[in-house]
Image 1: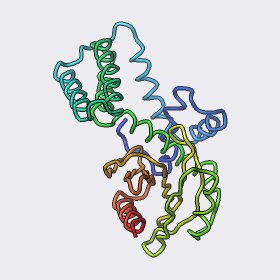
Image 2 (image 1 turned 135 degrees about the vertical axis):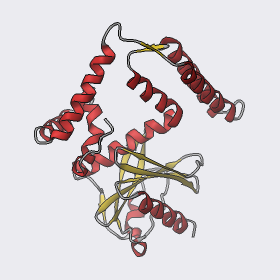
Image 3 (image 1 turned 45 degrees about the vertical axis):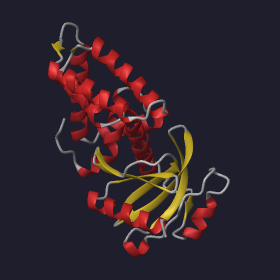
Image 4 (image 1 turned 180 degrees about the horizontal axis):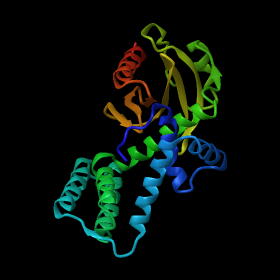
Length: 267
């Protein structure tokens, strides 16, 4: 499952798991089935995941979780709890996460597959739960905007048209930056629904590639970069707002975009 997929399949990769679990709406399920009919790579990938699910579901196929893995999980969760200020909402959230994870470890001291073990440990140790949920939602929104041709609600390169367009649609004012001189022309904007609220989305291009920038009010976060399913993410904070940029441009291009956007927004 670590095989490199053809570039043309990158937009379909995010839909594969939803298709397996029956979570796609009828329109997207039909689109994915049509794609499978002509794509041997995605069909093979789908069969691998189905085989894995069958193995996990078998009775009597169990391996004991290595003690060193258990210790790593417990240590990582302990550090998460200790890192939050006492009495804070973050501390309460992490404590809740601790109890859920502790229950997971207790109930799954034997698990059906080393592959499932590796995936579970990776998720626990490398991606905070809330961040993983946001990544899923943002990536799904990015792919949908490309698949259903709903990239913008207001299509213009004029920042002075895009910015006032958001008035009355959201309860904050996102910075709309003209970065055409830096090689990231503004395409327009739209609103989307992420993490339980309506958020602003700014749309840019880079050599034909789309960069979606999701913006909403949130507590400051450390700047971070991530990669998933062939897409790159950049996260940063400024002026009481959190920004998530996602695109299939290179990591270097997305890092340059984040630096140019942040610098221009502070002027």
